[in-house]
Image (cartoon, rainbow, N blue to C red; front, side, top):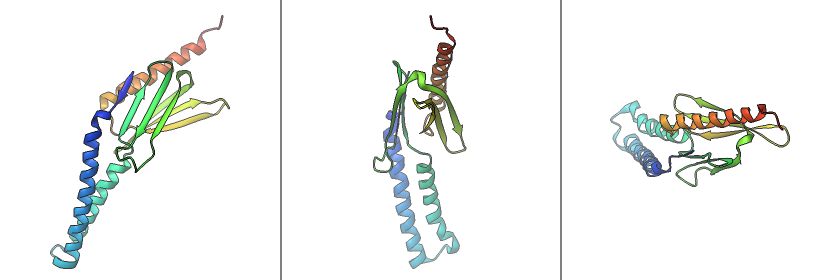
Length: 162
C-alpha cells in the first residue's frame, strides 16, 4: 500500500508563507504601536503573542510531508518539511519482517508514529515520524497496513519450518 500527502505540499507552503507574513506584519504593527501611536496600552503585546503562537503551532506539529510504501518486501518511510532548510529529511527503508510494533501518539495538536524494529545486535530501534498533517482516513489506512504487516510477521514465526 502506498500513502502520501505530497499533493498538499502547495497548501502547506502557502500556510507557512502566511504564518511568516503574519509574524512580520505583527512585529511591524507592534513597533508602530509601541513607538508611535500607543492606542492599545497593554494589548499591543497581542501583536507579537498571536503571530508567535501561530508560528510555534505550525512548526511544532512537525514535518508536513509523510510518505509510506509497503509494496514489495520492504517498508519505506519518508518524512520531510515543505521548507527544505528548516529540518533534515527523514528516510528509512527496512524489510517487513523486522517490524515489531508501532504506536500512534495523538496529543491535542500533534500526532507521532513510533515504529519499533529489530536489529542485528538484538536491540530494538524506535523510529519516530510526524504524522500530524495526515487526514483521519490516511491515518486509518496506515494503521491497517502496519497491523497487517505485524500480523503476517507473527504468523510466520508460528509456522514450523519443514
